Length: 320
Image (cartoon, rainbow, N blue to C red; front, side):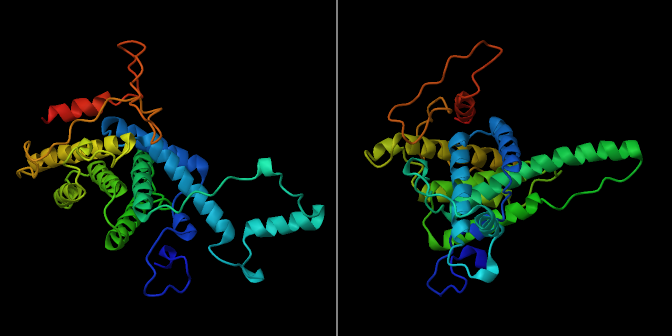
């Protein structure tokens, strides 16, 4: 739990937060991260909800923040606890002299802001899902290889999706105790649902229906059942569309999971005013947009535009 506090000796008034030590619990190698991003993006092609490009950019900003915070070590160092990077800098200074001053034009920009625990939980959940996909592929390849060799397949516990999921659940629980709900909280819960639906088990997890019920109540608490246009000037275009997407995705899971479990859905058609999200070009849709970037025309009927959001709209219309 100490990884959730900037101070080594937190006071009773200190709230848990994201630290460089906490970020270090996530897969840090860039190539590993990219593979997990690709896996999650593949899953989201069939279960679209949030803008994954923007999510990935924010995740990478969190890792840059973690590297910058780690360089300063969240506090002063003494000589006995030098990091490998500091030792390398010392060795270079001894053999080649001190480095020259960095020109202003080459200096780094301001460090990213400290990420929230809810977003850290979302990234951990996404990596858990990506690792689960990785594990399924690796297990199948190992099984085929072992069958050819006549040996039992061995599981590698070095990178466990269940550990990453538990880390996400822990961070989300701590965030919930000390902060109001935000969009990242719901994104995390949706990824948790995707994880439970993607675990290749014969039975649906017993916690799936309660989790979907909580998603519905959190979404209502945040006012997602009311269209953002009813609050002029409150939300920018990107956030308004994000709220619509999350509401309709929660609506979707409420209907189908409840039906599968033999229960009545919690959301009725007459209890919300949130309109359907727009079909946009996901590659260029960012928080800086002041108008909806319309999707590009597909190259052909056989090669649809993969950057549009049309499938999500079709999925939502299916439940109306």
